[in-house]
Length: 145
Image 1 (tube, rainbow, N blue to C red):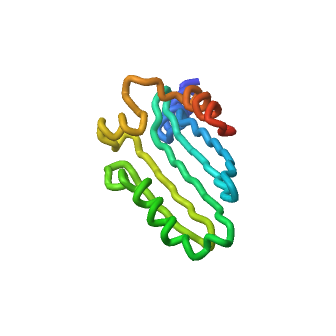
Image 2 (image 1 turned 60 degrees about the vertical axis):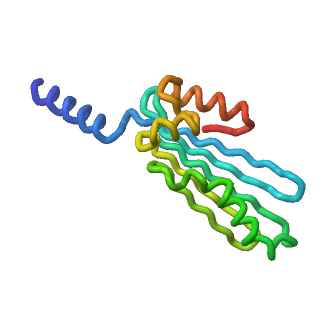
Image 3 (image 1 turned 180 degrees about the horizontal axis):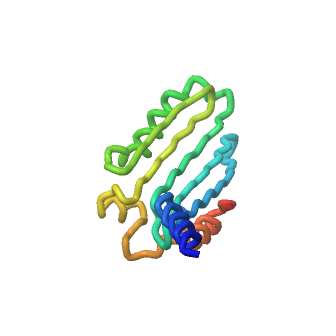
Protein backbone atom coordinates (compact mmCIF):
# COMPACT_ATOMS: atom_id res chain seq x y z
CA UNK A 1 0.00 0.00 0.00
CA UNK A 2 2.86 2.38 0.84
CA UNK A 3 4.41 1.69 -2.58
CA UNK A 4 1.15 2.57 -4.33
CA UNK A 5 0.87 5.85 -2.40
CA UNK A 6 4.49 6.66 -3.19
CA UNK A 7 3.95 6.02 -6.93
CA UNK A 8 0.75 8.10 -6.94
CA UNK A 9 2.58 10.90 -5.11
CA UNK A 10 5.49 10.82 -7.57
CA UNK A 11 3.16 10.84 -10.59
CA UNK A 12 1.11 13.72 -9.17
CA UNK A 13 4.28 15.66 -8.34
CA UNK A 14 5.76 15.17 -11.79
CA UNK A 15 2.50 16.22 -13.40
CA UNK A 16 2.53 19.44 -11.38
CA UNK A 17 6.10 20.15 -12.46
CA UNK A 18 5.34 19.55 -16.13
CA UNK A 19 2.54 22.10 -16.23
CA UNK A 20 -0.46 19.84 -16.06
CA UNK A 21 -2.47 22.82 -14.77
CA UNK A 22 -1.81 24.81 -17.94
CA UNK A 23 -4.77 25.39 -20.27
CA UNK A 24 -4.63 26.59 -23.87
CA UNK A 25 -7.18 28.62 -25.81
CA UNK A 26 -7.07 28.96 -29.59
CA UNK A 27 -9.37 31.43 -31.34
CA UNK A 28 -9.65 32.28 -35.04
CA UNK A 29 -11.47 34.83 -37.14
CA UNK A 30 -11.65 35.59 -40.85
CA UNK A 31 -12.65 39.00 -42.17
CA UNK A 32 -13.00 40.45 -45.62
CA UNK A 33 -12.52 44.18 -46.17
CA UNK A 34 -12.97 45.11 -49.79
CA UNK A 35 -10.81 42.63 -51.69
CA UNK A 36 -8.45 41.90 -48.76
CA UNK A 37 -9.06 38.75 -46.69
CA UNK A 38 -7.54 38.62 -43.21
CA UNK A 39 -7.25 35.46 -41.13
CA UNK A 40 -6.36 36.01 -37.46
CA UNK A 41 -5.48 33.54 -34.75
CA UNK A 42 -4.90 34.02 -31.03
CA UNK A 43 -3.32 31.29 -28.94
CA UNK A 44 -3.11 31.85 -25.20
CA UNK A 45 -1.93 29.73 -22.29
CA UNK A 46 -3.33 30.08 -18.80
CA UNK A 47 -2.47 28.91 -15.30
CA UNK A 48 -5.51 29.31 -13.10
CA UNK A 49 -6.86 32.84 -13.51
CA UNK A 50 -3.65 34.24 -15.02
CA UNK A 51 -2.63 34.54 -18.64
CA UNK A 52 0.92 33.28 -19.19
CA UNK A 53 1.53 33.72 -22.93
CA UNK A 54 -0.36 35.12 -25.89
CA UNK A 55 0.52 34.67 -29.55
CA UNK A 56 -1.47 36.78 -31.98
CA UNK A 57 -0.94 36.18 -35.67
CA UNK A 58 -2.66 37.55 -38.72
CA UNK A 59 -2.33 36.92 -42.44
CA UNK A 60 -3.72 39.42 -44.92
CA UNK A 61 -4.15 38.22 -48.50
CA UNK A 62 -4.13 41.06 -51.02
CA UNK A 63 -5.23 40.86 -54.66
CA UNK A 64 -2.55 40.39 -57.31
CA UNK A 65 -2.80 44.08 -58.19
CA UNK A 66 -0.94 44.84 -54.91
CA UNK A 67 2.11 42.75 -55.83
CA UNK A 68 4.37 45.76 -56.44
CA UNK A 69 3.23 47.48 -53.23
CA UNK A 70 3.95 44.70 -50.72
CA UNK A 71 7.24 46.20 -49.49
CA UNK A 72 5.48 49.49 -48.75
CA UNK A 73 2.60 47.69 -47.02
CA UNK A 74 5.07 45.68 -44.94
CA UNK A 75 6.93 48.84 -43.93
CA UNK A 76 3.69 50.54 -42.85
CA UNK A 77 2.65 47.48 -40.85
CA UNK A 78 6.07 47.30 -39.15
CA UNK A 79 5.82 50.92 -38.04
CA UNK A 80 2.29 50.39 -36.67
CA UNK A 81 2.70 46.97 -35.05
CA UNK A 82 6.37 46.77 -34.20
CA UNK A 83 6.47 49.73 -31.83
CA UNK A 84 6.54 47.56 -28.70
CA UNK A 85 8.76 44.84 -30.15
CA UNK A 86 11.73 46.21 -28.20
CA UNK A 87 10.02 45.48 -24.88
CA UNK A 88 11.25 42.53 -22.87
CA UNK A 89 8.73 39.71 -23.16
CA UNK A 90 7.54 40.75 -26.63
CA UNK A 91 8.55 39.09 -29.89
CA UNK A 92 7.45 40.49 -33.23
CA UNK A 93 7.85 39.02 -36.69
CA UNK A 94 6.48 40.14 -40.03
CA UNK A 95 6.92 38.54 -43.44
CA UNK A 96 5.55 38.80 -46.94
CA UNK A 97 5.15 36.05 -49.48
CA UNK A 98 3.68 36.97 -52.82
CA UNK A 99 0.68 39.12 -52.00
CA UNK A 100 0.27 37.84 -48.42
CA UNK A 101 1.54 39.65 -45.33
CA UNK A 102 1.81 37.74 -42.04
CA UNK A 103 2.68 39.16 -38.65
CA UNK A 104 3.04 37.48 -35.29
CA UNK A 105 3.19 39.15 -31.88
CA UNK A 106 4.09 36.94 -28.93
CA UNK A 107 3.79 38.10 -25.33
CA UNK A 108 5.38 36.35 -22.34
CA UNK A 109 3.27 38.05 -19.68
CA UNK A 110 5.64 37.31 -16.78
CA UNK A 111 8.47 39.14 -18.56
CA UNK A 112 6.50 42.30 -19.42
CA UNK A 113 6.99 45.46 -17.41
CA UNK A 114 3.97 46.62 -15.38
CA UNK A 115 3.53 49.50 -17.84
CA UNK A 116 3.55 47.18 -20.86
CA UNK A 117 1.15 44.78 -19.12
CA UNK A 118 -1.22 47.69 -18.67
CA UNK A 119 -0.77 48.80 -22.29
CA UNK A 120 -1.78 45.39 -23.63
CA UNK A 121 -4.53 44.71 -21.07
CA UNK A 122 -2.88 42.34 -18.60
CA UNK A 123 -3.22 44.34 -15.39
CA UNK A 124 -2.58 42.25 -12.29
CA UNK A 125 -5.93 43.31 -10.83
CA UNK A 126 -8.04 41.87 -13.65
CA UNK A 127 -9.33 38.35 -14.11
CA UNK A 128 -7.23 36.86 -16.90
CA UNK A 129 -8.78 33.39 -16.87
CA UNK A 130 -9.38 31.31 -19.96
CA UNK A 131 -13.15 31.70 -19.58
CA UNK A 132 -13.01 35.52 -19.43
CA UNK A 133 -10.63 35.67 -22.41
CA UNK A 134 -12.84 33.32 -24.44
CA UNK A 135 -15.99 35.36 -23.78
CA UNK A 136 -14.20 38.58 -24.74
CA UNK A 137 -12.76 37.13 -27.95
CA UNK A 138 -16.07 35.56 -28.97
CA UNK A 139 -17.73 38.98 -28.54
CA UNK A 140 -15.14 40.27 -31.03
CA UNK A 141 -16.21 37.63 -33.59
CA UNK A 142 -13.60 34.94 -32.91
CA UNK A 143 -14.42 31.24 -32.85
CA UNK A 144 -12.65 29.56 -29.94
CA UNK A 145 -11.76 26.02 -29.02
